[in-house]
Length: 137
Ligand code: 9QG
Image (cartoon, rainbow, N blue to C red; front, side, top):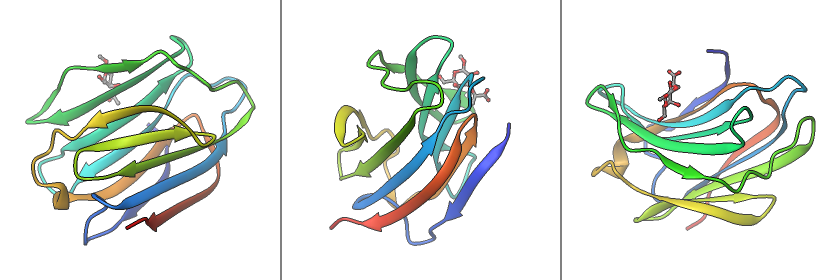
C-alpha cells in the first residue's frame, strides 16, 4: 500500500463535509482508494476503490474485521493519464460521489455513529494535484 495523503479531522468529517480531490492516474495504474476511516476499531466507513483492471468502482466498508457486501459502480469515467476531479460529500444518509461535477453514485452510511469518521486517506495509483476538505453546510 502506498499512502498518498492522510488527514485527521478530530471533530468528524460526516455529515456536511466535502472532500475534493484533483488528480490524475499514472499510465500503469492498477487501482487507487479513498478511505474514510473511523477513529477506533480499524473501521473503514467508506472504501471507494476504482479498479482499472476491471473498469469498475468497488465500494465497501470494513467493520468488525470484515469486508461487507460490495456495491459496484460500473460507470467508470477514469482514463489513463487523464486528469479528473472527485468530490465526495456526505449528508446524514449517504456519501454522494461526483466525478468532474457529475454525480455517479451514492453509498448509504453503514456506520451508525457518523461522528467517529475522522480520517481520510488516499492510497495507491493516483497522482494528487490538490485535496481540499470543505464544510458545505
Ligand atoms: O477483495 O475487496 C473491497 O470489497 C477485497 C480487496 C480489498 C478491498 C475489498 O482485497 O482491498 O478492495 O487490503 C486490501 O487490499 C483492500 C484495500 C475482495
